[in-house]
Length: 109
Image (cartoon, rainbow, N blue to C red; front, side):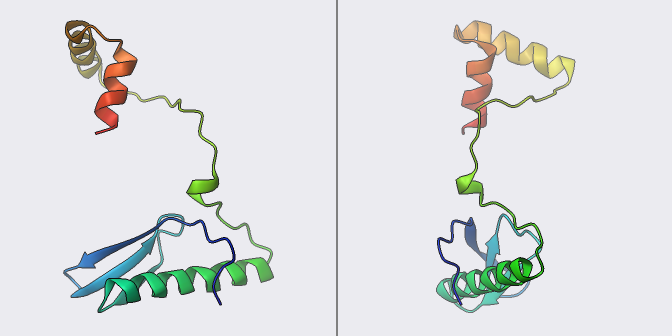
């Protein structure tokens, strides 16, 4: 049975080890589904997630919130080595932008 309003984050990738496509879900990183076709891998992992979520509901377990439904502030702290901080500050100064803008641009690539 499919999940109603399924907002989970799915990805299909080739698995050279298995010689098949692997369906994955970011919110449930320990689960996967293998198939000969990408479409089959996606259908399979979506069914696995639906089954797991339904089972979790029955057992009154906490169900992961879909990443797509989460609200993000746009702020997070990153710690770097002092030499990396200095290097980035120099790059930002030379580019005439703030360190924050430089870091954001590098992270967005």
